[in-house]
Image 1 (cartoon, rainbow, N blue to C red):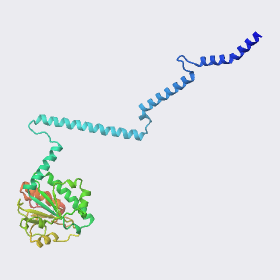
Image 2 (image 1 turned 135 degrees about the vertical axis):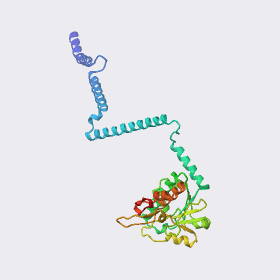
Image 3 (image 1 turned 90 degrees about the horizontal axis):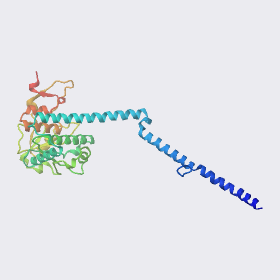
Length: 316
């Protein structure tokens, strides 16, 4: 009986022992089952494959993407090379010309421009742009006028001797004001005067000179004691003598640019000749004359060949 019991105990314990032996057989050297080791090996394999893809991701890009990447790399390399060459060129110029002042920074130039404009407000020539007629213009004409104001202001900033500009008859609820804000970046910070008053009530009438192509009197000189008025009018229908009649209503002196005195008509296919200029072109002439005191040079600056006029000394 004892033998049988012992045998049955051995038989009963043998499955457990076999299971324990199986577990011991599946356990590796580091104490983890082989199944877990296999999972760890698979995970490491995936990580290595991911790192390989990340390192060589360009190999998986399409040819179009690779082409764009190469093109962009060429652009970047060209810009770096150009900056390097420019830097070396400036360095060589400084070495060859040690007495020349270095190029000023943009901040310094902006401060210098601001100083010149504010000085013109107190002692420089004055120029008014009469915008009281803007309600007669179409949307397209207002946009063109706003562009002319932007170019005029840009030329004035670059001038060695700028004018002080005043926009008269200019209301903040007018369409021209909205166009100036829309088309001209930083218009609200322009260094100029903006007023709703009319130019005829803002200054003494005896100091005003209205520049109009319909005047009988040619402008002979730019007088610093005078206030010159440009009519802010873009009229594609070409209504004649609008600004001239307005000046006569207030008994204000008028003048025209001396185009007839220094220029002659040039024969062209369209037989087109016009003395009507944009306000920025008139300003370029006034500004150039103020610096050079030379009417031919000033007129050449502002009167384009498309107007059908050339300088007298250019005629063969």
